[in-house]
Length: 258
Image: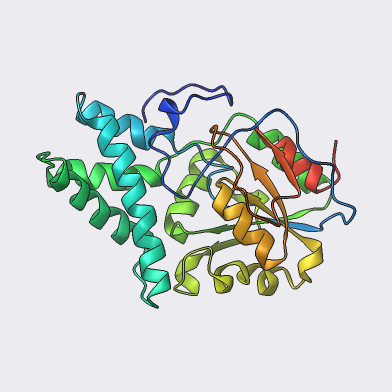
């Protein structure tokens, strides 16, 4: 596992390897906490898991071109996810990550070995949590807030990362888009939390890493916190997230916890 900074105040360069499941960091707080306090929160994977080591590995493998590889791979992966979903097709995250990586390496004329390709795709299942995650999750569970993942990552990848950081017992559901064979922001993907929690939309919050995901969850009808870690501007579309902050304080506010 590559070393990486622990600060939640990050540069855009540090964030290059974060898959194009989107991202951001705006000024330190947010909008006022919503009037309706949620009873359950569904998380995208990356408010919890730090994806920067994926890009860091690309830079180690290709010191001169690794940044370009990470950036273009991320964008291609994001594009493939939307292409498949809009066309009514589906392939799991790992398959799309591999396909988009192979395309990007060829486009950049990089000699990418099978071993390096496997290591880069596999890096998504070897992520650590952000420093502020565990204390916030413990507070949420102590307050009786129910937690789940709702992610484009596979269930196996999510569970591997949960086990790595010892947070599995804090989550009652692990919802991968593999279940509905549609990536977020498809409505069927967000709807998984309704069945999983058995609650109405008004009682379910969503914690997004990317601005696009915050918009998608808000459009679906969830109260949404944007854990805006990486410095991308807010999407100029409405309705936007109810709360925006650089770290897990956004999620605590969504649940009405100081």
